[in-house]
Image (cartoon, rainbow, N blue to C red; front, side, top):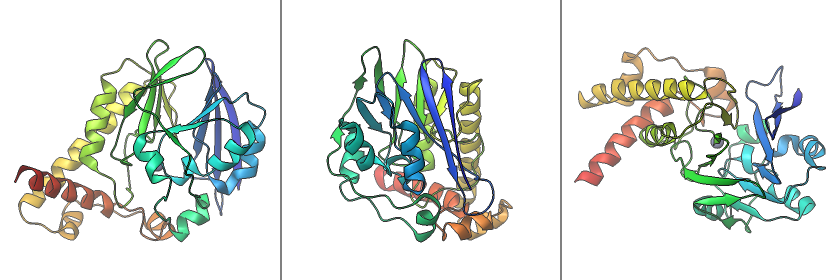
Length: 277
Ligand SMILES: [Zn+2]
């Protein structure tokens, strides 16, 4: 089943789309358009449908928030049509030259993500005709991820920093402590609306992001307390009575799981110890 909806928020256009091999999609992705700027390009599983919805927009530049396939999948097609520059963080522009391979399950749900070698690295600011967006690094979910923030209008395009106040699974290489730091950095800004890559919040965005911060901090604390008692990842999982979403874990071929969250905290602690040694 495929779903596409469009919405307007102030001067911003949002395109919400979702695909699922069975039943209703469980997760949606978004492309935003503001003042000639397209933010992210969606996944290739719905390439033609997405393209038909956005092809008449007056796009002058495209910004990619991070390398994941649901954000970067359609860069080449969009660039070919709009003939405009593509920008991203320096790390994203490097990663997209030869992006990490994606699992069969990811291909099934979101399609493949081809390399794109001509992204122009951009840091600090991105300007459109009427607005100036701050580019803010928010690593954790992905090392190359950035947010775009327009301070005058208080618009925050937060990519995948939020998604939800409670998180049930991580990818293999996510960092919990980096996400905590990134959320704290973003909470210092003045905003209330979260133009999230998957789950926009038009009310109480800041409060919801705070909730996620508390959730991650608590989770980090619980896991690290047991790690200090020499518990293994499996023992911690059991002790905290965590439950795996087996459907998600199975569908993603193990790439998405709650166990990844436990392992992420352990990896963060071990990395921290290496640095301080
Ligand atoms: Zn992502």
